[in-house]
Image (cartoon, rainbow, N blue to C red; front, side):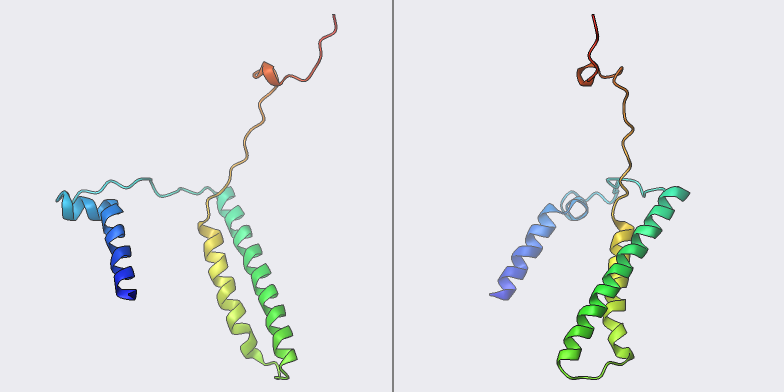
Length: 124
């Protein structure tokens, strides 16, 4: 049964994947990617670095607290091995936070450009 489910998943993947369809079905070896690699300026890199660091630190300390609480109740002594799992998950979260898209703030338009949102009342 597990093999059948795996076969169905791979069949769906191969029928939907653009690269696979181009090469094996249409015999076209030229692939044009959907999007270009994102180019980051210094401000965006700093924002990504800070976001990754914050997410990694929060994940590390939360998991460390949870593991310490659980191990304390089991009567086991705490050693440096307790840092391995939180460090691993903090690294995973940092990588995910780095590759999440950067949200850019929208510039506020003045009320003169959009008169429907003008909240000022004119006096006669």
